Length: 115
Length: 431
Image 1: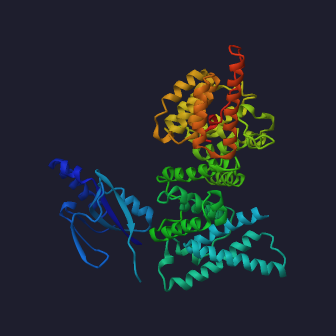
Image 2: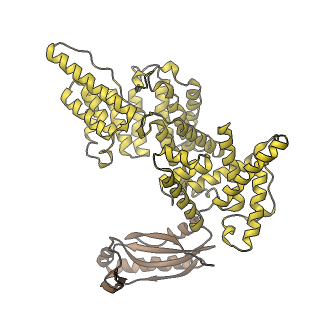
Image 3: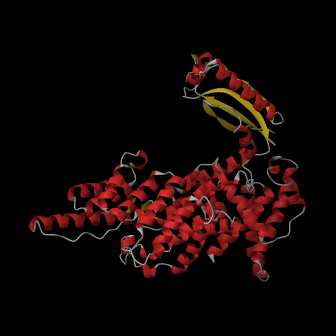
């Protein structure tokens, strides 16, 4: 068995424009997903929008730079994630395919293990 | 001999990966078995079934290594059934074939890029060397080696499984495989660039893969259709260039020299593929190739039937390249003016903007209508996007003919000329 991180990337503007009914429906879908895949789920969270993010990096002289916003500006932003356990990539993909992400999509990454 | 070696290597490798679940390790074991064979067979007789001998030796070595390593590393539990290691299977005809099928699905997993799928399949399933693959796709050997290494690493870290997909996943997954085989074929059939029109080795590898898939999945319209398409299209190979290596179009080819046994085999397969509903896109493409193959001459080709098949194909596979081929067929069915109208509808498709066959098809119809200035411009545009030398020579010759005709027209203006022979290569598919 391996662990995979399922990253949910969606257009934040679509979320902002979604009314409460739509947001509530998506929440229900997540709950449904969680109930159905509880055996494989190892964790997960929803994130606040990138406007709440703070990024830190060092410049060439080692000086710490603190900036407002996400590390990389992209059309679709990371909005949440799940950690799942699966026997192989096909199983991981079949679980990831059920993750609600109507304003974008998901990325599946194997989690590295250090012995 | 080299061919037999290559095929045997791939077969032994596929079985050995079944034991190791690790491609690199399996390659080492096979290498080891081959070098042992070299020494052993010099002293003793060559065994009756060298492939079985090599497989057994490679398997034993693999089992040994896996046992030793699995105590320290959990990596090799990957995807391999422990029973497979503990109770060695009987070597049957079916076994190794199953292994190769599993390997094809691993190499052609949709999570790998199409270039990577092609490279891995040629290396691990067809047994080509890295330098051969690099040459075929015109990249440097280190670049190709790096691509293959990255892919193997992805297979290991993401745990891309080594197995035939479940029946519900199969339709989507087989598509990814057929796309690879078809791409190997089209790359070989008309090399995207370079001095040769055809890369025979790639065509043969694609035929080999298609035959293998058909052997293992005999009841699928798409698999059968692809094998038929390759057979029927490649049947024309030796007539596609003249004695001087110049391009000969479908209309100019000596049909008596087509490979009639390949046509016969392909035609039987097409019938089978079309009997399944809905007909797959490869079955429809093969049906078009079969119509050409069955037609005794270019002049009496049933273009209406071909247009009708392209209409069905557009539904099964809505691609601009299919639409272009359909437009060409419309021109042959209803005349160059109708062809131009059909082409105009495609002229703004961004996916075709660099596709030389769009311009060359336009040029052909303009040429037939004796709209010399526009035809010349269209040939020049086709030349801009064409990198295959044989095709370039052909296009340049067309421009020359046009100029000669224009010159004689200027001299004897008003005299009627014969229409140039209709001819076009896009008709039989993308390339």
